[in-house]
Image 1 (cartoon, rainbow, N blue to C red):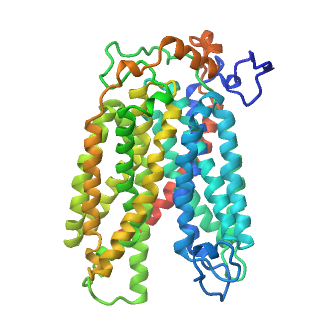
Image 2 (image 1 turned 60 degrees about the vertical axis):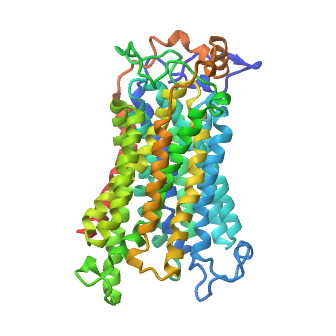
Amino acid sequence: MADTAYPERGGRAAGFLDRQRTIASPRFNRWLTPPAALAIHLCIGMAYGFSVFWLPMSKLIPGAGACHSGFVAELTATGCNWTVADVTHIFETFIAMLGVSAALWGGWLERTGPRRAGLIAAVCWGGGLVIGGYGVSIHQLWLVFLGCGVIGGVGQGLGYITPVSTLIKWFPDRRGMATGFAIMGYGGGALVGAPLAVWLMARFAVGGVQGVATTLMVLGGIYFVAMSLGALGFRVAPAGWKPAGWTPPAAAKALVTDHHVHLETAWKTPQFWLIWGVLCTNVTAGIAVLSMASPMFQEVFGGRLLGLDANVALSTAQKAAIAASAAGLVGLVSLFNSLGRIFWASMSDLLGRKTTYSIFFILGIALYCSLPTFGHLGLALVFVAAVCVILTMYGGGFATIPAYLADIFGTQMVGAIHGRILTAWSVAGVAGPMLIAALRQAQLGNGVPKSLVYDGTLYIMAGLLAVGLICNLLIRPVREKHRMTDEALLRERSLQHEDTAAADAQTAARGGFGVLGVIAWLAVGIPFATGLYIALQKAAALL
């Protein structure tokens, strides 16, 4: 339950959605916060599973040909089928909007609190899918972009950063693990959502046409409810709260500050842009492999997956068997992307963030440079293992970055700073897939065999990781002149209404886990475990 004292702000009593109404009471247990965060991230994480819609969206009008009048005309065309290439831009749109919205409203989120921000995220993501579904039903592609891409992208951005600051302040002893829990949900959202979407499309199919429109609307409703419950479950820690029996280390690590930097100062420091480069290079390299994992696996190994010569002509049945193996790789990739987030974020609590990212880049360079060799030698399982490790570090990079920011800039405005950093994801989310697709096409145009077409691209990705490694090694503590003064810190805490909670810091959140805790964790654990089981079933095709 929230605190029972709701002081007036600006001449009015604090409303139900205001931050001060979410301050934890003595009966609250901090382990109720991660499932609230997971409820939101498992929903918006369906972004990674949106590829299940591309092919069905290109076959909505039986017997009609594909639109060939250009992308702009296709936005309003009603008599032809959309092309797969054009509908895939929806993914790029909501990833771009994720970074933009997180950057624009991160500061507002810190002050308004996770309840209001989480509910608005639920309205935007759930409502955006409903609007997109309606756009599919009347065959208006512009409306699908507006709903799923733009409005849904705003929901993505707000939903992604909503739990970050709250979790870090509840878990000062385990920053990486705490944010890893939430962001693991984003990586695992496709494990849950993609199989559900496939089942729903088949369930609502009419006349051989997949039920894309109804599926989007139903998912929008489900996600709105789940995200709203997560938002209502948030409670914020009182200022100065610490876990029982825990005291900050007497000698802080060099890159872990006990001071705070304001958002408007943080983004002007070299440290901000170096961390931005760290995230951008790691994501660009990782998302390039993620976006092309299935075709890359099929083209590199081809008939060798069936014990045949690499250049032998394949029958339809043999191609289907190879495609099934590639689908198994996609399932494994999603699994390792998700589990890598909690694993590496937790490890960063022990190793330190800088060391963890150095491992990402050094090990990543070695693996990217080795993948072509594994392909030439026909070592399919070794190739798969290397890709899975790469994807753990891709996911781990997302999960570790909030704790890295808290170490460097302090915890007071870490959610807002994290929002600005996510513009790196927007850039990488567009640049990575475009880069690997363009390089692949260029090499095919030059007569390079399909089995060799990814070699140069993978070496380029290794070079990107080398740039990220340099950025990471250059990170130093923020200079004292950039820190917030005591007066500025008190003013910011007042704006965030933390001054009303200071008296409760020693007594709040000492409650037991209880039945509510069990229910909350089962509510997010059962869907995730179901998605995990389905992913493992698909991965079995590789064997």
